[in-house]
Length: 296
Image: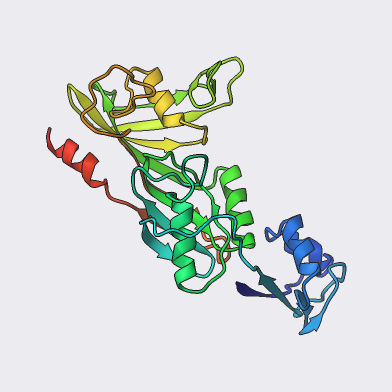
């Protein structure tokens, strides 16, 4: 993979070194180290330059970012839908029963395998960088960075809570019209998977919800995350008496009319990592959730 970025130095930027200028644009220490070791990785007015040089207003700074790709994840034809793609990122719509990353027992059936396969068919080297995470059975939108710079900038946006994530879920019971759940979440003692509300030792977690349809048996809710804790929506909705349909981990013993937790990543809003353009993507409810909703 090869990506070229060009910047014209503006008045006021001349007091910075090239390294400082690039750091202010999201270039991480790892990327800068790579660029310094790359022939013509950093060029000033078409001449290979040092990162400690100070450019003048009007100077042209050209960055050559190269990647050989990673063979850590084997390619496999795992299906997924591409919602958007450009030189810097890809937005995927993940189906149910698809883990995001390979793990023990799930080595070639993940979204990562499918994305690597997709780029392999185009003879493009690729390193899998997923910005937001979804559980195996949660469907919907995911952001995948196509190179180290977009990955660094998008990860920083996620850390600063600048990526807006909206989910839709089907939950047991008649949910309130709206609400905010501000309850820290921690690991359940003795479990590596399950999480619990933990006001003393847990990490801060905030979920806002709005009820789109309130039925007697179950409700259709829209949820917006302020934080991104593991199983946050599942734990928070269970904590207020409305566990997700199909969630046998947090609602064991319940009669579930759907074979997975009824949770869908429905909307993403964020700024493009390179251009700064506002991006907005949506994904309709998957067939199983839509069919269940229509049944009431």
